[in-house]
Amino acid sequence: MKQQDIISAISTRLGHSELNEMQLRMTQLPARGTFTLLAPTGSGKTIAFAIPLLKSLTQSAGRVQAVVIAPSRELVLQIADVIRPIAAGLKTVAFYGGHNMKEEINSLSVTPDIIVATPGRLLDHINRGTLDLGTVTTLVLDEYDKALELGFADEMKKVCRRLTGLRLVILTSATPLPTLPDYLPASATATIDFSKTDSPRQRMQIVKVESPSRDKLDTLIDLLRSLPKGRVIVFANHRESVERIHSALRKASLPAGLYHGGLDQNDRENAISLLANGSTPILVSTDLGSRGLDIPQLSAVIHYHLPVSPEAWTHRNGRTARQSAGGDVYVIISEGEDIPEYLNFDREYVPTGHNDDPIRSETATLYFNVGKKEKISKGDIVGFLIAQGGLSAGNIGNITLRDHSALVAVPRSFLDDPAVISRLNSSRIKNTRAKISRMA
Image (cartoon, helix red, strand yellow):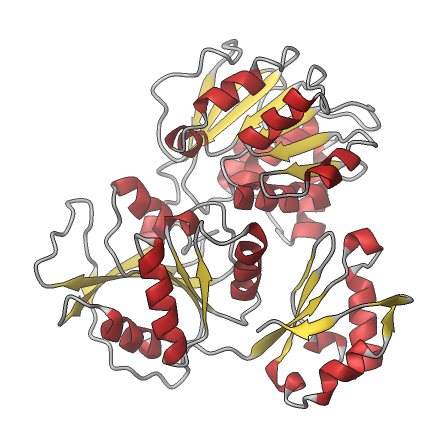
């Protein structure tokens, strides 16, 4: 693809009117070589590596040209959602554990140009014989440091040794890498270091919140009631703690969602969608939510538990102060807790339990049991809700369209009338009978 077409698509389809310094630097990357991009979370690195990746591809090649490997399902979906709109004329597919294998195999009936995948699922396709990666010339290993931390070194090694025709390799990492893996081409290696440039830490306020008791729930509730309207992630260290905190927040009538590795993939994806569209603007999460989530305008991060490592601290905080925006990081401390050396507070705060413009949900989410595979588009859903629901286009918020479902944000007041759902279910959308329900 031509660089001017890529940049134009980034502007028109992703809404980024101009590239940041790191992204501009990546437009100058040579077409051959192995490169490491050091960049903090939230710096726009997906667009940064997408530019040289797309420049390396040709239209209508009829073969798999590029592979992006990422360590989590969430990150795979995020990357695919960035690349797909700007890869005009190229087919992009996402493969990951928990996704329907039959549908993934069917998606290979027309050979994709770009595959975004987790290491294990990509290796599964190779072992099944459903995928030949011998034609791949461009490889991106995104969040390579996290992939090593999660134990994917062996899977990545097995996959990469099948990539015999590589010309361009890009590794991204939030931390410096000691050495390059021996299974990658070592020619023309270079490091592009933006790890300290425009650091999100410069745009954050680290705030100490003291809890009078070792059980921090009352302090957390007071803090959430004190914060202004926005979106917040609360981090805790264990699934059991996350479940307990979530239950307490719901009992306190706070609009909270739940996110951890014990949930099935669909529930996890729904939790992120409901946070992003404002239906549940508070998300209680384990460290699973500290990477691979691109939530716009996340106003604050709250550490209910102190993180287990400096890396966990960095990645939790990276959910806020993204893309040149500011953000607050609140750390709830109880008596006797040891504060890590890497944690430096900018100020202290005592919650009042009140705000004139508090965190609240003004959005509800409708669930449609039809999606892309039923030939339903976002435009079809908008037209349906205008015609059958009486909404205006401006009242319809974010639409998350999946293979067999869709989540649609609407004003919470729209569902005050209990007959609305029945009326929608009695109508057809694009000659298709859909089951529509309220999710949140």
